[in-house]
Length: 252
Image (cartoon, rainbow, N blue to C red; front, side, top):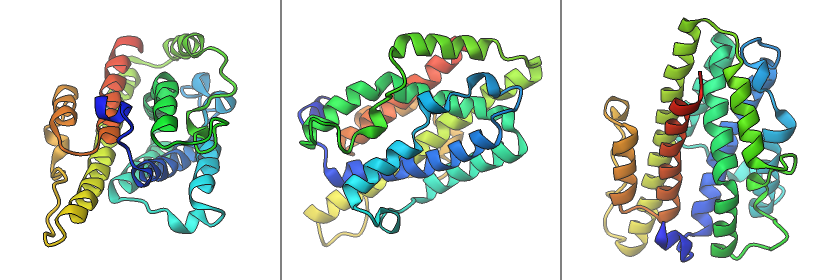
């Protein structure tokens, strides 16, 4: 985090993260809009305040140009995340509550901090180009909105079994985010190593096989602190750890 604050984050790395987030939000918001009238999900349907897909499209066009859709790539872990969102939306839509909370309130909580850091580190325009993702124009007070959102979650009418399933899906959402950032770390770590050690083909990126069997919030935070990957991705991973903690503290 200290290195990130000093500006040690590359534009390519930032673009890779934004691209992956685009695929996640494209899937999430497609399923949210499909299920906006679902009695469990509808209390937390806030498209004007929270939805990020359009903002990400704006940012990606700024970074890649008008043909950005042909230039961005979707890593496998990001595809897995999107597939899970589509499955939930089509088969178990009440579980969208977990994914919406995990992503949106995390973005709202850390958005302004990350915006300022990225703007300075990447020398982006003070007028906000390239940073629309972090800007919530229809939320006047992040603190008050989060209070409203949590009160809406607490008002959801669902039986004990459904509530337990929502909490379990929050763990799944957390692990999917971990997997995404693990793979992004592997990609960026491999690219950095190839630049400095062109004769080696082995990446320092962390192994991800069977990660779902041993990753916990504490181990993920330790991994994010000790891993030799870039500071921006370590910060994103630590932020993810905070999300699951908040999930357990505030809902139901």
